[in-house]
Image (cartoon, rainbow, N blue to C red; front, side, top):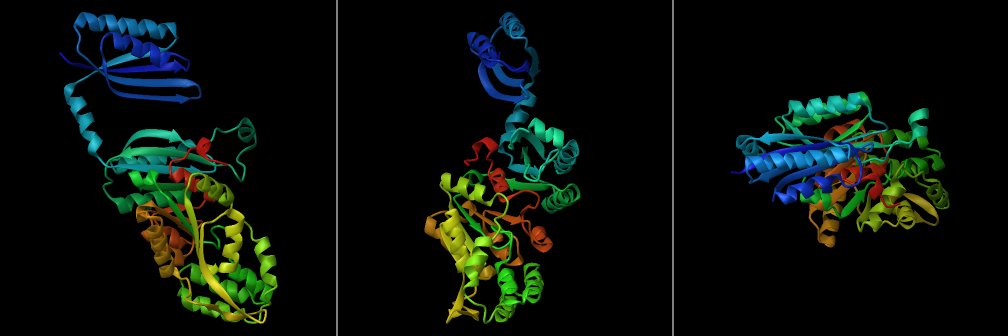
Length: 409
């Protein structure tokens, strides 16, 4: 008669634990139905779900043999019989949708975990597994506290369908604002592990500046242009209209200032690390910007970006005319360019990641398989499905499931 048994082993991690238990099981022709192992601070937790077709006496002999093997390794072992009803229920769960919840912060504390898991439980989401993706915390950091560049990330694999997806996202957004963390919730599909193209906004995304504001400072109209830029990025003004107003204020600017501004552009935290890792992993990258090609090409050469689409400054006799050549790259154009690049690369839109901070980035964030509002304006953060506000750009690798040890620096 078939018997289903759950075996749990725990204790100080050491070589040979899994081998010792499965060697005994092999003598009784046990069938492995499930197996899982985790190690936290050199402490082992091993579980095996097995099917047995042996007599009661043989089962007793087997359990004693496993216990003796565990004792010899100073490992605790426990056994639990599983009813057919419980087993059928467990099997039936495998068809349910799965999602990934990613918690990102400068550090992790128990409150963050407790409140996040409470939200998941309210939505009838069952946690199957939890993994730390970030690196181990060094003793120096423990002694001195968080550093500006410290990162922490935990990934939760959850099973089930949220009762109210809108409420779930709102709860995660409220939690993020209250605890200064980021929480991403995404469907666990094959596309999540098979993205191939990442499209970036440039200003306030890849770089910690708005280039048009820097040009305005050089032209002596910094305050006027900055005010218009802020209103446009926050969604208060139409992008094309605001862009025309700002460009008009730049009329007469000397072309010679462009090179100096480009060289002083501050890179966003994690940008170089992210682009380097993506290139080594075979991803294609693109800048889709409402800024200017001159600076996009500068970053392209510096970082190794594959594609750049931005506005072309019109310059006559060494002076900025206050206009651009060709069509303005606004939000809709960014979405069109993203779709065009996906088609050119022969990939589905689900395999594209889009990253931006302003209202004119929302169209491309909405059509990409993974749209990330990065250190975004409130309107953009509230409208995008995913947001990163507290870590650097390289945190995007965590949303793809990469661990710290996987990052290719």
